[in-house]
Amino acid sequence: MSIEFQPYDIIKDTDMTQPIDFNQRNKLKSVDRAFKAEITNIIRLTDMEKLFQIRIVDDAERQRFTFLPGQFVMLQVPGYGEVPISISSSPSAKGHIELCIRKAGVVTNVLHNARRGAKVGIRGPFGTHFPMVQMHGSDVLLIAGGLGLAPLRAPMFYVIENRVSFKDVHILYGTRQPDQLLFRYQYEEWSLIDDINLQIIVERPDATWAGRVGLITKLLDNITIHPEKTYAIVCGPPVMFKFVCGRLNQMGLPMHRMFVSLERRMHCGMGKCCRCNIGSTYTCIDGPVFDYWSVMNLKEAI
Ligand SMILES: Cc1cc2nc3c(=O)[nH]c(=O)nc-3n(C[C@H](O)[C@H](O)[C@H](O)COP(=O)(O)OP(=O)(O)OC[C@H]3O[C@@H](n4cnc5c(N)ncnc54)[C@H](O)[C@@H]3O)c2cc1C
Ligand code: FES
Image: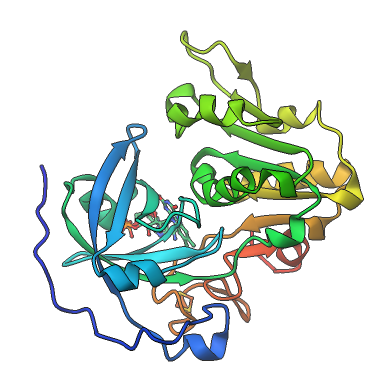
C-alpha cells in the first residue's frame, strides 16, 4: 500500500538570518521549527532498510542547512509522528540529505510505504558530532555493525573527501547475514579510493557469500594500532561497543580516542522533554556522539 501525504501547515515561519549553533544548550531551548521538505528519491537497500533522499523545499533554507558528521534530524511524517534519524549523507552535499531508515514501527512503516514527492518535515540538525578536525593527521578506524553503517556514512564521506588529511584509513563493516549488508552498491567505489582498507564480514554466510566469516572483532586481527595517533568511530548496537571498544582498548587505544553514537528513545531532540536522559546527561544534546570514556562513566548507558 502506498500512502500519499497531504501538504500541511504546521511549519512555522522563523527568522533564518542568524546561524544557529545547535550544540549550545541555551540557544537550543528557544529553537523549535521544522523545514518543509519532500522525498525526492527512495532506494531499497534490504528488506528492512531504505535510503530516502530528502530535499528542503525552500531554496534559501536548503542552502543554509548544514550539519556535521554524527548529527541527526527529527523527521516528521504528517499525521503519524516524528522520529530521530542520523544524517547519512555527505556534509558537503547541498541539494538533499540522505536518511537510511529501518522499518521498526508506526512512523518508519509509513515511510517505507511512501512514494517520491511525499511531503515531510525536518527539524534540526541536532546533537553532538564526531570530532573530524581533531582527527586530522591520524589513522582512523571507521567501524560499523548492521544499521550502524547509517550514522557512520557521514564521517566516511568526510574522510573520503578529505583523504589527504588522514593517515591510514580502515573501514570495517559486519552484519549477521549477507542480505543485511547496507549500501552494497558503494563497496566497489569505496575500495577503489586511494589507500582505504575496506573489509566486510558476516556471521552467518549463505551460498552466495565468498567473503570473510565471523564477528566484526576478527577484522581487527590484522590491524596495527598506534595508540597516540589513531582514532576510532564505532557505530552499531550497544552490545557491539563492549566487544569492539573493549578489543581496541586491549590493543592499546585509549578510550577517549574512541567515539560512539548512543541512541535512546527521543521526543523533542532538543533537551526539553526529558525522554532521552541517562542521569543528568541528555543524549539528544550532550550526545548522541560521546567518547567511549564518557560512556563508560555513564551508568546504564550501554
Ligand atoms: C539519535 C538517533 C539516531 C537514529 N538514527 C537512525 C537511523 O539512521 N536509521 C534508523 O532506521 N533508525 C534510527 N534511529 C532509530 C529510530 O529513531 C527508531 O527506529 C524510530 O524512532 C522508530 O519509530 P517508529 O514510530 O517507526 O517505531 P515505534 O512504533 O515508536 O516503535 C517500534 C519499535 O522501535 C523501537 N524504537 C523506538 N524508538 C527507538 C530508538 N530511538 N532507538 C531504537 N529503537 C527504537 C521501539 O522500542 C519499538 O520496539 C535513531 C534513533 C536515535 C535516537
Ligand atoms: S529528546 Fe527530549 S530531552 Fe532529549
